[in-house]
Image (cartoon, rainbow, N blue to C red; front, side):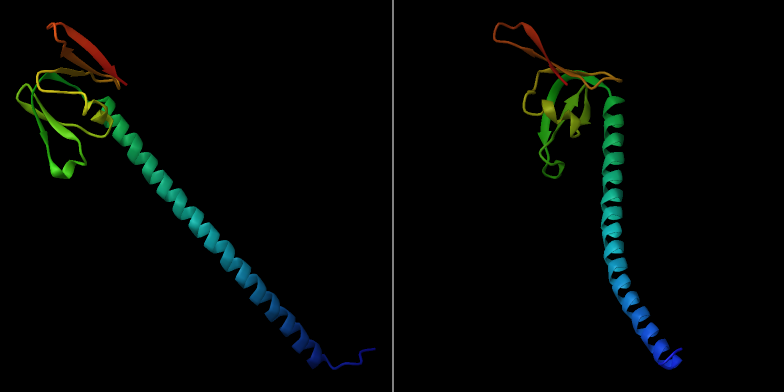
Length: 135
């Protein structure tokens, strides 16, 4: 037979229930915080990946060729020059930056659509053209 009144059982059950709610609530909050951090990092990674792929697609589909008649360095281009080919300014992007320190006025530059290669032709001291390929 029951020796304790039902009301005391109820209060004991309520205390245990309250304890589990508090403990699980803290664990739940910690788990949710971790999911929030993971989700934020995942979204950031996807945005960076999409931007990178989009930039790569733009670079692969770009083409230009001609003799460099002028090079200009602007302040807001993160150290990348603009080159003038055939009277038109070509703004070098990050993938194009590999040629930035190598090129000079009078060099010939060829970037074909569908490839990541940039070919730079220079004259050596003897006046003979040589080719340097940048991947």
